[in-house]
Image (cartoon, rainbow, N blue to C red; front, side, top):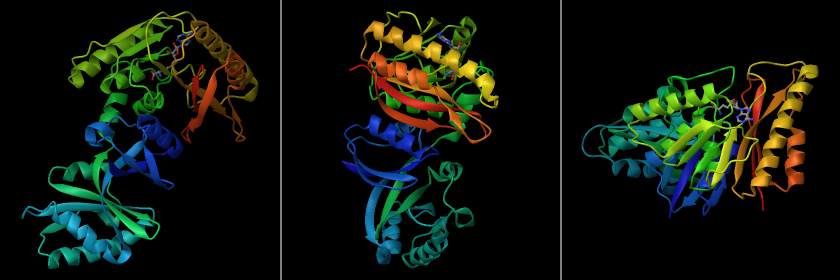
Length: 372
Ligand SMILES: C[S@@+](CC[C@H](N)C(=O)[O-])C[C@H]1O[C@@H](n2cnc3c(N)ncnc32)[C@H](O)[C@@H]1O
């Protein structure tokens, strides 16, 4: 068992739900606005971390000390990585104001010099380390996370950092993209898959460009993707081919085909995860009068989808990203009738969280349903 600090992304509650679902035997030791401390039996390294969509970095606890011993504690941890060659290091501070970094770094510099350790800190303007900086020191240096937890300070070694270049490559370089249809960020697809809490095959019945299928394949899952629009299915196939070539994946463990999600499906799967039809593009504010019609159509689609699932009698968990609409006056409209119908059909809902960007008029409500 090891203790890890996870630094959470822009939707902290969703990040915590993802961690709890991926590591069900976890024990949360401490929580703050942008971090969580967990005891885990799983090993977190960069490969494992790359499968978490909701966290920015993870660090493994090396030492816990009081304020007086902090500088010598950090020096001890750095010394373990020192091999008589100049050591590049960076510190990132959480749980307290980042402005204290300057004091820590200056004291540490003095201490390391006294201890005879040739080193250089890479913090720019005494700010926390960015993922690009981490990449630059990864092979020849070390980043430490310092977390103030009550009166104690945790000193932890960074073991995984969000690979923003790879996310953006997967998002923007794939051959089939369609902004009108709306595509979800790869990070969100990973979160949805992890929220299913199961390790087996995942079916995305509204696969669009195949984002969730691609992320599932990278996570080593068997994947099924289907969509009512043959052009989208063809595009998703092209995207998976692109993924295979660009990520050296000799994969065959997926299926992509045309299918109406409101109709019976006989394929075998262990969980359903999807971002469904959003009705309108993300960036389009809509007059409330027009919205009634859009929401009515979407409710109809999703109610038929749940009725069909009920008829299929499966008990697989269903993680759904359904749209909600922001009005200019600040109000939000969500698919109330879909939720009511799902409840009446007997689906239990144990997760209800938002994923939304300020500049977008359409956000996603993330729900998890299951038939008992
Ligand atoms: C917002 S897109 C999904 C985008 C996808 N998550 C991605 O990242 O590319 C919604 C998709 O639902 C599909 N769709 C709409 N109604 C459907 C139905 N009844 N059955 C299956 N797919 C449907 C649309 O063709 C569209 O591709």
